[in-house]
Length: 198
Image (tube, rainbow, N blue to C red):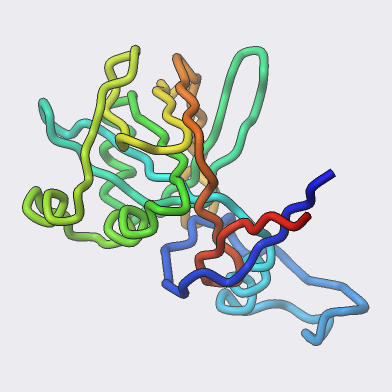
């Protein structure tokens, strides 16, 4: 049986859409004291949880999208089919999700790091997207997603919950398309890739 292990790819800081800092971390292997964490320490602690990288997309006007890189994405329920994504209260995406209700999730491949870096920025332009070779496609549900992504889903917002400085959006999955390839991975503030070991 082959095993998989993350290896260093290329460092790049992306925005972390995390839950608000709670109380304490207690671990015999941790060098942090058993005390309340600062927001910086909490972000650093959460970086030890390996995630994939997604881009959330909303069609802000016909044929034009606003995208946001996010790693706070997870499944919620199989029946009904639900996922969630957490969005900063200050993000433009917050207002768009509240207004439009429909959105796409694109789970990125390891060769789409530039896509992740681009949508982690606050300012976007059609010229930059064309220069980076970023293309969109419509799902069966009519939602625009990143072309060539590992997984593409169209979702409908069915609930939202205020959680500290973020809002948790729960989405009902309407369709999904899976493609071949390896995932883009994020760990300890850096992009990684999965290496195969015999």
